[in-house]
Length: 428
Image (tube, rainbow, N blue to C red; front, side):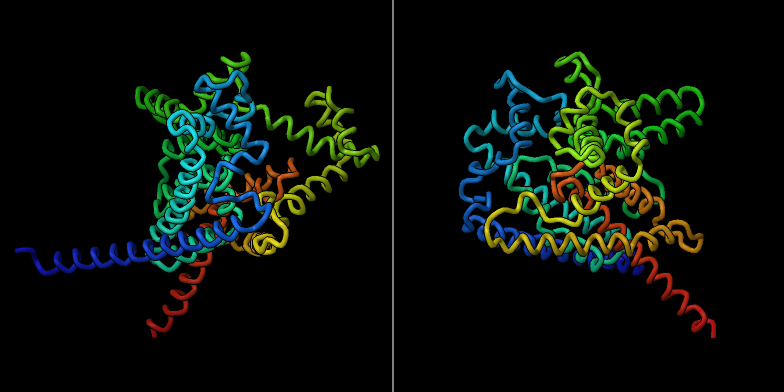
């Protein structure tokens, strides 16, 4: 017979797992109903660019989505045109394979897949917060914040990378949750996939690789070589993209979209302000500038550069609505504008709190995970300042990062405060 204490432990674990599962099921059912309500409301709204009955009608509505479709078709031999040098391979492969396997039903399959990614993203936020706090309530709260935001929901109806991007970021957070040491090779692999989906994550990937290599070179002999080999394996998605780009145009690059964005949406805008020109003539005027000339011009006009960067960062990318929420009198427009405005103030309020938590020696819980998640978020937000014209699309993928960071910091600050208050009472 099992000792009574073993029975009690098993019972406790079983009850705890049932409680976690109950929270997850209720969350997913509620999210599904919420999604369906918006889907049918938007389908009935003229010019909303959403149709759940015929998803193919608007799935490729955005210009970028047609780039992904064309590149996916090229990969499977169904097109002679491609922009693989600008749109890395991960999402186009998903699109192209779906179109090969499902034909006219590809858009419905892609939409359903993205709906499931959206559901899974909220579930991973829930599980990450539960793993970190051992409480269901923060998990439900975090997932509700994510599910209720209109932008991630609306993007599932279009052939764009953001839904996959968000899902991979949620996997990253889940891998870190509740762990004292982080699985560096898995994180590198996830960020390799992210970078081969959306190249804006090159900085975060590079920092992870540099850290992993620094750790590897501290090892000796064969162990060092093995670790470096594992890092190279974790970068397989990047090697695949470099192979595609070299095959296509004999260059080794992940994407050329970054330099184009920098020139057209930062340098050209600064130039237009300084020279008192319209934006398009400004783009033509600097068309043949190299990177050195661009940087020299920005340094020579620092005030306009900073003002343009600030405007891109806040006014054009965060304190805005969603480009993909269309239609006259669409109730979702006011909803997303309010949500994004509230998020801007929340970022400002939480910045000193998060930095205080990370810098203070008073707090120990989950610091490595929180620091990594918040660093990824800050880099993503700051990089978005070189671009504009997408409304909140450039920053919307960071929603899981700040939800998890803020809830964990608030939870640990409050729980630590309660412990500190209770300690003198117990001592007395």
